[in-house]
Image (cartoon, rainbow, N blue to C red):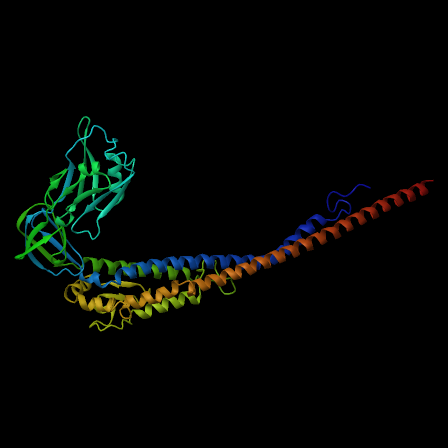
Length: 467
């Protein structure tokens, strides 16, 4: 007898549909697991979002947690020939500055010109030689060793430049088939050069030079000179045209000689104010993240919780971080005359929890009481100050063993367990469905045989009655 190709064909029963319904019912056992998997996956993503938002707030908090930020100044000059800028510690005031001499870098060139830059200039019978360059400002002379085939103008240039010593070597084409080697030091008399070549008389005859006596086989193209200036009646001399310590905190860039230029340094609250605004914006963005991750959508009694709820609704991690940061707003611990942020123009909305800035009040505080505002927000930078305490809190939250990482580890462990559970239940379902199918197939076959027997007997009885 031919096998039955489809359930129910032999028995005329809806076994195929019955198996489909039973399979669907069995797979319903997976639904609670997949729901838990989805919820925990959403949690994992949410913790990542929380961590990212917290890191952005940490960046803004770190930027504000700098005492120098509240000591910022800005400088201006009455002439473009004297460029000025300030760093922390620059004292506000007015300076009369004259520049009588610019710093210059010594430049030496070979007296002899050469037809090619690849010609070996040293004694070819010598296997090794050393170019020694001494400078007053250098503790040890610069020593450059050259092998037998390394005495061409190009090789000498490359060897000096590769030493990265502050001495630059270049090749100048004077005219067709005439080249010179030029050496240029950093500016200032401390960088004047005394050059000798040990182990190669021929090369020494080309490169030797003594700046103390202005004698030798090279020619001085530019003489080394120091910058000379007068600041408020004080004569000052420096090796460079960039002067960073006269006065301290003020950087002068000398480009030309000037007479009686006026440099004015004034207090600049702009950087501190911008940092405070960025800090407030970053915190408010963090509050938005808190709200989004813990959002609750109301449902009718008896209905399931809305899938529009935040993934971390009711989560203790978010609550801990929220409470921990907010607690520091009133916990400066500093000796500032200001005890609360509201006194400097920063208040917190009672409903949303976001911070708001009273721009006029903050501007006035930074203008009149900069030190007190700094003390409130920054403190000693170690234990006191609002941003200092927040920095400690946030660092602990973001640590490798912090509450966020621990929460993520727990969720990952749960997901791993759910995966095992899903596979176990899925295998159980497959076995159950296979058993149903085998039983239905057996039933179908049996019913088919019974139907065939019934038909046969009916035919026999009919034949007997007709005879």
